[in-house]
Length: 171
Image (tube, rainbow, N blue to C red; front, side, top):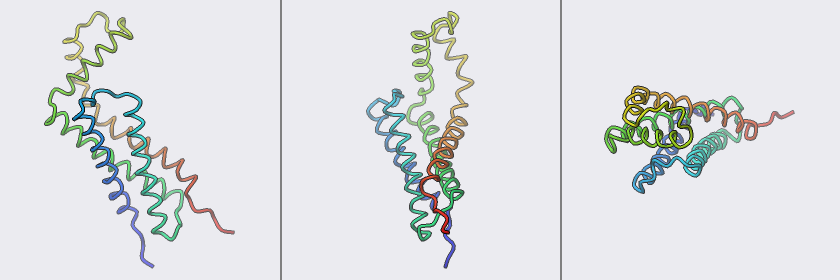
């Protein structure tokens, strides 16, 4: 019996899920809805990610004679999340540097207006230009947040998923 590589499942299902997420993001971009980070967008992204992890782990289980350990579920789920995170970072770089170079400025402007409406005292009388200039040096944090956030959510979901799909020990 040949050894089944979990790495291949991580790459295949991570790439597939990443492409689906990019298609969804491009749809939002072409509809000019990519600035709206409402609950629907967040839930849809999460469902797509969880579906990719679940399908990848179940495919591995099926290929492995319906046997899978909890550690394998966590490993595959986190690996799929890593591939998704890397694809998301490259897409974000492409979006902010090629498709819409002033994306970060618009995001900061939206953030300023929302903060001005909700918590004007937090801005301490700062105008929009000052806010953008003070915030721009911190926009690079977007990329580590994407990586760490996606890995954390993927790992936590994989832990929960492993409780349901792991093979029970036979007596």
